[in-house]
Length: 309
Image (tube, rainbow, N blue to C red; front, side):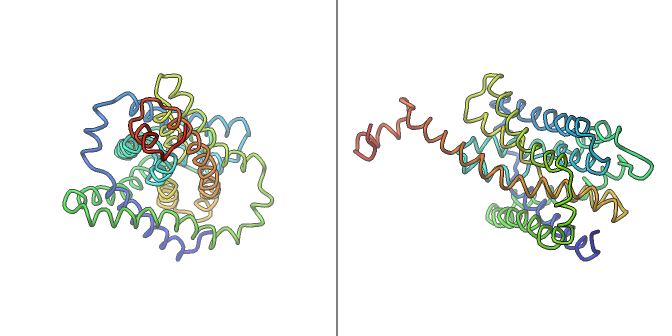
């Protein structure tokens, strides 16, 4: 069960996070993405096709409880957020592509998410749990208005926008920690008794997104650097947005708490799995750079004796 205080604090923090996300976006990102549309199209389709299909497939295969199935599907239908850009930076991915994908998937969420949720959650809805499209749209508008405010702030002041962007990114981690510290201990018994299928689905959603995002990109002819970016953008969802949709859409606290459970587990595990995946991506990126005979910076370092062949 979520206490009224927790719900209020979460709502405030989530709105600040979405404002910070808006501060990281600009019209320039959209213009840059149009110059090389293929990676953006591949990333967009990976985000909104691979993840919902993966979540739905696991829900059917493991015969998940309707509350759990709907919770994991809501997470899967969300766009990527600023956290994915942070991991892309450490993984030496294509940061411009990462920001472009975050911009486009977030901007189109108001259209894509209601449609995807209505389609994929339909088989799991019961008399007790209904995913009302109108409520989902209201929740998205409530979250996207701060995003628009952040975009406006950036157009007026780059410095203030940068500060709010960093604040929003930090709060994204704080929201997850807040839920873990305040809510998880009260439900620790449920975690220990949780069906293995729930844990596998919560972990497998992110790992599956990484795997399919990368290999689909490679199969479509994208280079390794951009494929790593699409991989991370696909697997790392905007967890705080999923929390907001669940809290704002489902008025019954008991229902909201049950649906929030898999979203919380996903957010908890994705931080750990993303860290491991990013570490290996970074190592691979360094090896690729070392063996790149056309890299002028590396050639200069060899000339000056900073690197040994």
